[in-house]
Image (tube, rainbow, N blue to C red; front, side, top):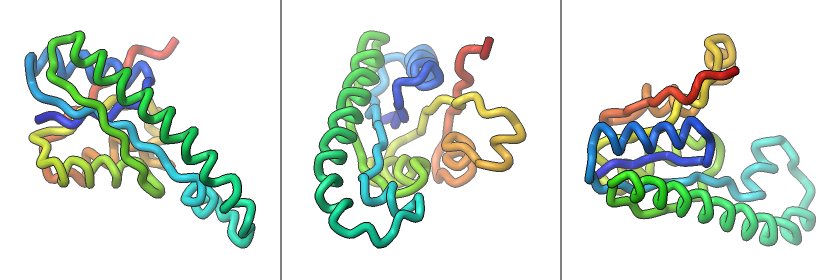
Length: 152
């Protein structure tokens, strides 16, 4: 079973196309990772705001989760249209999406992880890291990183 990380980007769409071409008919889970409102605030250093996070957080989380569900469903539909046997999945995770993708792959026992490169330049990838780079270097299974369309 393949785990395909999907965020709706052109790079993620290219990953689905490559997976379908290289492994036709494979079972796949298309996962979209989202972050809870309070986790985003904590990561941004917005501590001590108390009731604001409590009041707004639930509404934001519903919106973020619904968006992630739409993305995962879109990705699974694209994968199925290309001959994969895909189901959508969303996963809330704090911080970097790479850790959540790796945890889902471990939990599902995925045979491989497929994701787009996101097109970071060498310098920004060195400074910031990237989801694909983190997954590639920390996965306990094969990882296919697919380059997206060339930037104009």
